Length: 234
Image (tube, rainbow, N blue to C red):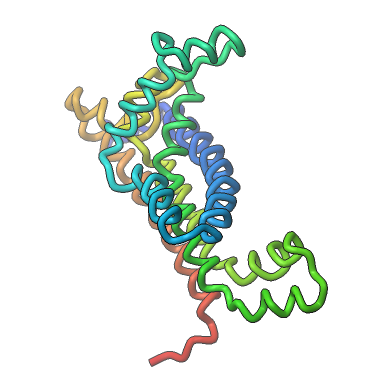
């Protein structure tokens, strides 16, 4: 008991705040980008849709370290693009918090995109036709008809995106590293303390992550329940 109290007293909360900031910023990026991509791709033909959908979904099915490898090749200062960013705009991605955000965004984007696309595809087409008949512009139809109708699906995708970004480990480790108080996220902290044999601290972080995951799933289920309130119960 004394050991647990000592751990709580000396607990370093920086991984929590780094993960939280990363999750929030990555979710905002994925939210707007995922909705825009979903809206554009559902308008394409079958072949173009299949190719682009496969590219956008790829980070969800490959190992995060594979995505991290390509991100490292892209943003490394030894590579043309990474060197150009640094020399032109003084932007460094590798071993920075920006790297955490980019890695989390790349890994979490497929969840936002897939949920938004599925939600858009289930919108009643007759409502869109009715809006056009009433003289509404495509922009008005999108914001006043499509978005409200697809709301529950988009909300679920946003919550899942935040959860994925919050817990990202593989790509983040390769691109941003594990620098204390800078890029060290909760997932990286758990791996580090386990390697050091500190299972008690790891257990505290695991409990924190489980609590966050439960809250996220509860919120998603409540939102999904609102979206299906008119569905008959068995």
